[in-house]
Image (tube, rainbow, N blue to C red; front, side, top):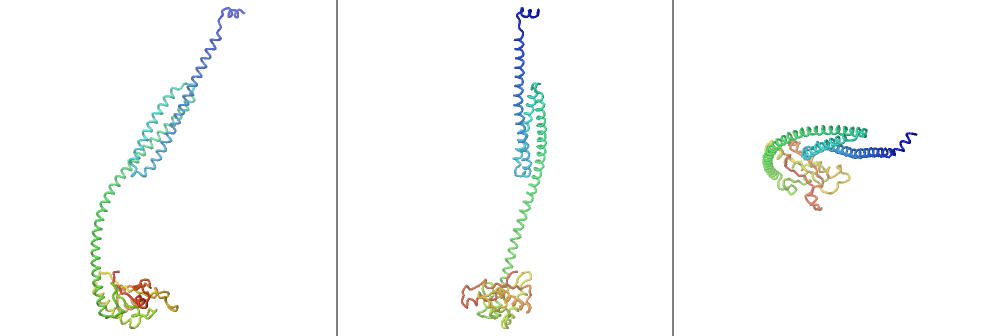
Length: 339
């Protein structure tokens, strides 16, 4: 009772002051928590931005690994990429240091959040260290590739010089070969002319035997009956003369000239009779050419100097359809040519 009277008598009331002090303290704590939360928000944004930057760096490193296979064509671009990566990593490290300094200034009330941020920063540091190691490895590979490219360029230059010299030699040899072949062709042409002249003298001037270009042409009726491939006696007599001329020719032409007497069989366009032993005009023309070749061989002509070919009705010399035109197309041709 005495105390109550004392307080009432003194007129002093401490409760409002206590409330003010408590309010001030609460506001201060709220302010500090607000500052901490804002700081945490911005720091988390910064860390997220750094994670994105590190992801981008890893993607760039992967792209560089692919570009290594194209070093010869993209050396300059690869160097620019590496320089960009190094600059980006330097910026990331500076930013990380700034974040670490900002974190160290965070109020103690947020120690749990700070530990989390430190852990994220440690992960970022480890990722950055791996990126730096990868870049250094890429630099070593790029240097090795440059050395290989330089060696290849030297080898390529030497190869190009050698190839140029070889091409000159080939061109020279080709020119000399062409000259030699031209000489051989001229020699063969001369022997062909002499051979045809000899045949003309032996066979006489007959309308069914003529020279067309570089070929000696016999009408088929000289050797064969219609639709047959067996030599007639008159045809054998003509081939006896031909065999003697070919044997004499073999002795005249030098052995280094590779020549053959080609015997070509031709027919007209009329189809064969149903009773014919041949399936087509092509078979008939080939059989006739082979009959001539076999007979010449039997008379002593070297088989190595003879060739037989059948053309059927597909190489006419007279496009007409008269009996005379058809007779012209039924023929045996002799051609002295290179093998």
